[in-house]
Amino acid sequence: MDKLKLIIKREFFAKVKNKSFIILTLLSPVLMVGLVMLIVFLNQKNSEDVRTIGYIDESGQIATILKDTEHIKYIDLKALGIEEAKNKTNKFYYGLIYIPKVDSLKKLANKISFYSNETPSLSLVSAIESKFERRIQNLRLEAMDFDLEKLRSTDTDVDFITENFEGEKSSKIGSVLKMFTGGAFGYLIFMFIIIYGTSVMRSVIEEKTSRIIEVIISSVKPFQLMLGKIIGNALAGILQFVIWMVSAGLLLIIVTFIFGPGATSLNSGGVNIPPEMMEQIQHSSSNNIQLVLAEIKNLPIITLFFSFIIYFIGGYLIYSSIYAAIGAAVDSETDTQQFMIPVLMPLMIAIYIGFFVIENPHGPIALAFSLFPLTSPIVMLMRIPFGVPWWQIVISMVLLIITFIAIVWFASKIYRIGILMYGKKPTYKELYRWLKY
Image 1 (cartoon, rainbow, N blue to C red):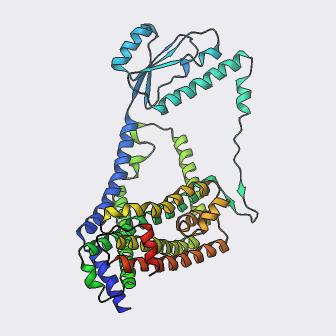
Image 2 (cartoon, rainbow, N blue to C red):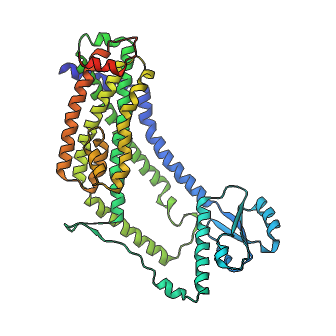
Image 3 (cartoon, rainbow, N blue to C red):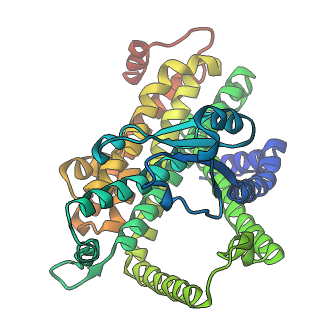
């Protein structure tokens, strides 16, 4: 036990004292916050662009809906004619809308053209098309002597009250919150396994190629060495994640304090919003915040927290044991490629199954992969926010622990033999033979 502690301590300090580890730990939060600020800045700059679009409406019925907005300015070029308008648009304007004169509104829907010197924005074109669709539809209804005001009065929005048989209500915001929470926990485990499992493998390969392992193995058992590497790297990884979360949170608070919350407010960019509309928006935002807080209270936070710890530890130990065995079996990192795909496959499948979980969290596919030990650390955590029976969680954890014990045992046998093998690329057949020794 004392030797295991020494190995864990050695691996931990070797990792945290590494220059690349220190630099990455310090710079990553700055880069993350900087990336967020860059996205906000670019979004604001993009929203400040004003596009000028010319139009020619020969029908005389459609262009009346083209009103200037914050980002689009419309100019009537009918007096110039289509050819001269094209030339002027090509030099000075973003685009030109041409609405020809046709004998029926039904034909007009497929005759409108948009000319542009560059590929137009999909969102902009879609927005203009949507306006034209409504306008043409209204004109056709008026031609049929329909009363548009009466038709609009029949518009109805249906918003279900979602409630289970125990009386617990949920909402669309609650569903989004559950998806986000489950996905965040699952993706966090996925990233941790990939990053620090690979770190364990590289550490083993480095010691094996430098022949240091021959000295170490003379005083400790291979199983103790493998387990010490796994736990030491895990502790270093947890420390790094804690530093990232704390420092990134503090940086976001500092940036918000310096630039102020008004940088992304509704009144930015010189948009004048009437006081009564602003009051309505603020009231709606306040209601949404209260709804989000209520939905957070409804989340199984305690279950999520303890499940995350167990699945986090179990998933990492399973995959890091496999990574350690791979590192012991090969002589260089390039030789690991043939073994990496089978290891990564369950993790990639688990992330893909997450889409099924979002759509049907209690379906047979979600249930099966949340019980399968190689995918359960990710899939089960994505399911838990939607409510999972306790017996499914218990069965999943028991299978995870049994699989961990079995994989560690198999990995230790490969590790014990492979750590002293040099100059030969192992095959799956040879690894199977090592298991019998």
